[in-house]
Length: 537
Ligand code: ATP
Ligand code: MN
Image 1 (cartoon, rainbow, N blue to C red):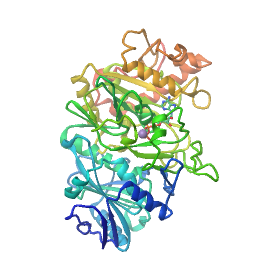
Image 2 (cartoon, rainbow, N blue to C red; image 1 turned 135 degrees about the vertical axis):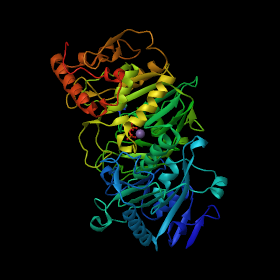
Image 3 (spheres, rainbow, N blue to C red; image 1 turned 120 degrees about the horizontal axis):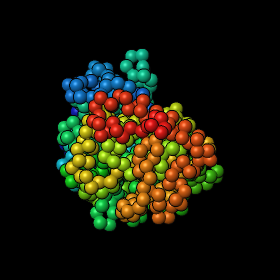
Image 4 (cartoon, rainbow, N blue to C red; image 1 turned 90 degrees about the horizontal axis):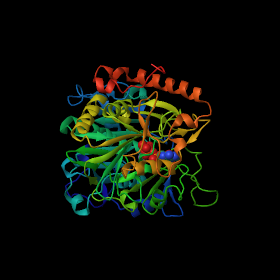
């Protein structure tokens, strides 16, 4: 085996059964970018970022994600369509096949870690088939210093082999691609898909097991930033609801854009970078993200204006889910290290394609728990294979697909935090449609959403008048600085009020039906937060 780069002198790939031809250890972003260009796997855009195509997969493939059923997971994991079991022997056979496959290959190895709070640090060693996938890991995970690399031992391995395809007939997978998490061996094995989000969300899933299960610590699918006075805000939400967009704020240092833990007194980022959507990105609307697309960043599945290397951000011909991965330092006011104190404000972001929920409303504790368990949004095109039109979704804790444990475990931990910190405000923010449903109304203006959350964070909504929503029972402000008052009550934005009421009841019924599975676990306070399924009762 030929080896290049820097590494812990005692580090070997062979104990993992891997005997490759060439291993490049911990190359710099510049080297990985250059290698990718040399190998014709990517090109530079006009601002110096590397642009690649991820191939057949431009989103995660949740139906092909498996978890090995073993002594650690058997009685803890919430098995089903989200956590699909795989027998250890099936994993071992496939793992050996992957090792065989890699024997004469060149790989790119990276030592990284997750969790900015040293108490929870999880060391990760990633083995990639392509240098740009390794650049992604450099950007998204936390980066050890050169000194740390020399002594670091991995806790977990990610082995990502996009050009290896499983044979579903003999390998126990659903199709050629797979992501398999093995808690005993501490390995995430990825084959058949080069979509980088599989690695990022693979580790998120692992932390969503370890933190609540082993440390009784809440893990969250949310972004976080911090105000001048150290006031932390969390933004929960499913894909496309605005976690990355709204947490990038020139006045509030960024803690992280997607995955955090809430330990005693601290919010800490799991990651070391951001993975921002690029569709329709503009310098004017999202200046911070735009400026982050420079040397060292990785653009995925974008297209150039013909004959140039200037990105056409409106082009969705490869996918709606165009992305850029960059280290958090590319955001000017990123907070280092990436942690802050207890949150002061929590925003639940929902992209409501029905256009029913108010653009901002304040939730009681019971309502907060109800909406956390419901995790409502309308999924917008792209992040998952096969979704091209918005469709309504309920995903517990705003990220059910990433949760190995039953959602009530995370809800319990959040509930404890809200009791412990009654001063925390919880807001429901609709970043979706206004003036009617998808097709009739329009997406809420980003400027207005920013004004509303800004006002909430500054305390400007503490002493204004509120109105209670007839169906959802949430309280929405009658005025917000710099926002036209007529949009604050969504009913007023619809041409036909009766149509609005009918749709609101229809959506409420979907909430209630979805909540049935949690009803037996919920207390009266949470149950009382359910929306009404009939008007005037
Ligand atoms: P993921 O979990 O997939 O990373 P996310 O929650 O981080 O998703 P964003 O990347 O922030 O989602 O995507 C929100 C998208 O919606 C952006 O492309 C943003 O420009 C667009 N958008 C349009 N209107 C709004 C609005 N009012 N609020 C927030 N985002 C908006
Ligand atoms: Mn995001």
